[in-house]
Length: 464
Image (cartoon, rainbow, N blue to C red):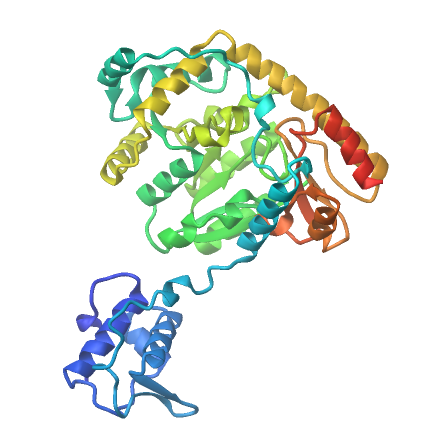
């Protein structure tokens, strides 16, 4: 009998390693025709993997004619294994299985609807409409200046941009960057990938709210990380559930979007923030604060960031995509020095440093005299559009339930029709269904940022 664990090839995914092992054992006559293999559960223990991994390997080998399954008896080597007649071309079909998800189907419907009618109500957009992006004028950059700028590149990114961001955080009273490392990334999603791949290992657990845009992120499955969700109530997180998850599953990181949360627009209160930090300190759970909407807080309404309340316990993420367009693809991380240095090492090893040109242009945008007034004007315009959209919904759809957010550009609506996505699609109103955020079909996210005066009239007509 083979020494299953010792002979297992050191490759990933593990089901492929098992397939290769069994194939080689058959080729070497260490497994004979019609010989019975250990049961899936038994073999999983021998190989120190999940039973589902063994089951998938058996399915692949059975489909290729190497194994046969006999109901009630087990799995056997085929009487005449077809090793010599295996196809000489890769079966690309195995890579394409189960790639059609509900998420991709929804995205296909949205893309098709936008192509057929560019004048519809696009409440499914993720970002600002082009005409709301702050007008920053001409950003002058000649080639010689760009070549000189490259001399100011450091491991963490373009030094003037790093200094500009540090200054913005200080001047906006968000937090200070003493004993912190600020590094530039290719957007908030890349920042999250970098943090998880640097600090966690396969099998570690993270928690985030439900609903949340984290719900459809592929990064957890890619890295082998176990995600758990915490119910989000109208007043904030269910901290009792969070504590239970921490104790049961040894949560390592808590991922939060506490300011104008995506998709609900919820703003965690100061009391909730303080209780949350105290709980995480008690169990030594690190917090990743995603603050991409923090730019849209007015000075009067701004609450202290989690980073400000517990600078050594929080890793902070932000980006420019919600201000300057999704194609900007430039974000940053602020982490305690020891963690920041670890992130820098992994970022350099993976070679995922954003382009120098993007960093230089971003610094020009942030330092132009029109940037701060542009953000103030944007925040005021978003407030007007939010109020107008809320008024239309409350008048024409009184059964729709939602809490008016204090900022951001999303409304989170719940109602009773599970087919609401298709129902609104037929009326040329696009929304993001709740299922994309781990919520029921009866919920949806609506982006009101594009609802100007003309769209307000159109929205009113379509809902009547």
